[in-house]
Amino acid sequence: MTGPLAGFTIGVTAARRADELIAMLERKGASVIHGPALRIVPLPDDATLHAATLELVSSPVDVVVATTAIGFRGWFEAAEGWGLASRLHRALEGAVVLPRGPKAKGAVRAAGLVETWSPSSESNAELLQYLLRMGVSGKRVAVQLHGEPLPDFVNTLEAAGADVVEIPVYRWEPPVDPGPLQRLIEAVLAGQVDAVTFTSAPAASSVLRAAPDRAALVSVLRRDVLVVGVGAITAGPLVAAGIPVVQPARSRIGSMVRELAVELPARATRLRIASRDMEMRAQAVVIDGELRPVAPAPMAVLRTLVAARGRVVSRQDLLAALPSGGEEHAVETAIGRLRTALGSPQMVRTVVKRGYRLAMEPA
Image 1 (cartoon, one colour):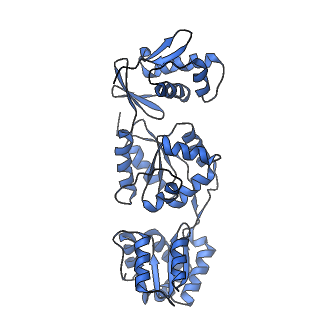
Image 2 (cartoon, rainbow, N blue to C red; image 1 turned 120 degrees about the vertical axis):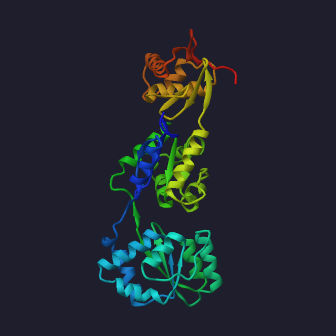
Image 3 (cartoon, rainbow, N blue to C red; image 1 turned 90 degrees about the horizontal axis):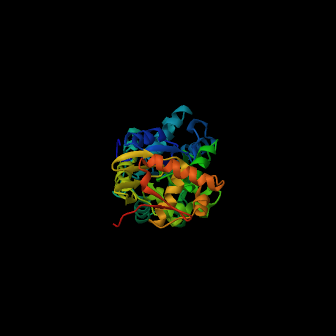
């Protein structure tokens, strides 16, 4: 075994910074299934952002909210390409500038602007409360979005009398090729994934929308798969669906991977079978500390036997568990392959005329 995530299979839904996240997970030993849930509209090609920027420089704002560093920085880079950077700077330099967190604050300063205040919690909720206490009635407020609208945030400001200009930086749209995402969802439903990571709320919403059977996916994510989000905002759509989400203390990709590397091994099913210690993974087992890959069909049989906790499981029930079904001899073939994969044939016992069971020992 190499790394705390050896033998585990992790689903990655990110589009932006996916390579970085995948590399972190693989360095810890994980196998990764990448199914990007979204694609990002390139900023220089985004006519919506161009139109919003023209509107803002034509009528400067009183307040500007910077929600993300990459979004705010990308906005200025796009404006530079359109020949609007200097006009955008002039439109914002007299405004109250409110970055949501330290990274956004750095982007604000890199643009030659000075922030007025930033919430210690890095939350939109605290930022909104500050704006309402400050008073926004009759003021023109620019809100830099990131990926999707912020209807509650914007509607509350408008209800308080603000004229809100939404700046749709980095708009998310469905992936051009939905195949990888569908394959990831199928793997989750088939029990071939131990954990799924999310780095944005739009990606979480997109995965739930893309599922052919949303109820089935939600059920599996609630019960069988560790779901990890980079922060509370990302977790929002999942929590709303009743899915538990593990989050790191700091909303950073590196922190999320470290949290995952602790949580996932701690949740592994551990059994004592035929004097051997076995830990379950989605597509592998660990026998007395040795990682042993298991193919999908024998793994489906093993999961069914594990769920029975030493009780006899009939051939018919094992046949129903096989991914591709088949005749009863398919069960015998899967059992043979399972015994070979485990490296200890006595771990799976044949019960004549009844079926099979694990040679489990009392805890």
